[in-house]
Length: 178
Image (cartoon, rainbow, N blue to C red; front, side):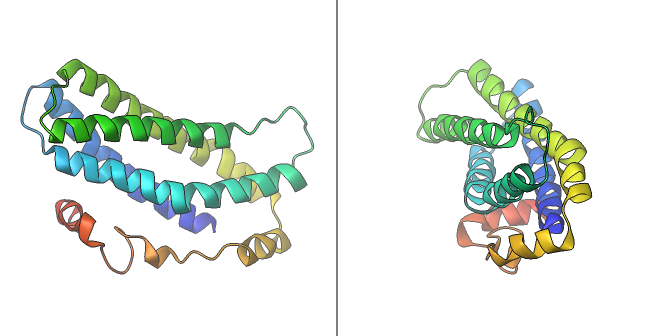
């Protein structure tokens, strides 16, 4: 299960690199394919909301319930997932407005896209440097068997990085060289 999360993080990092490039282009007042930006944000929001974050949350909740003895440990992970969902929705709405030819200031899109990328990267770093190592060190083989019994998502069903690319992500897959 941790390998699925690590692999998802690598894929998310690839997408964040594309968004970082798009952000730099916006700052330089160069042309940007906002459909591509929308597709990335949509993918991150959809895949994370349906599969990635629920997997992390289930493992983390189990970890908190059965392995953490320090009552001061807060469930920061769930709060970050909620915040990422909120900013994803706001950014997607802003990009949809741009694609419908609404006037959105360059400063607004720079701020929102920059905030989105920054929060995503900080979140990945937090999980990779603190959460996942603590979980890996704490959970036993029996714990993992218990968790796996309750999780029924095949990572090959990923609509972008799985065995087949969903129609809505074909242009994004092409851009990523998949």
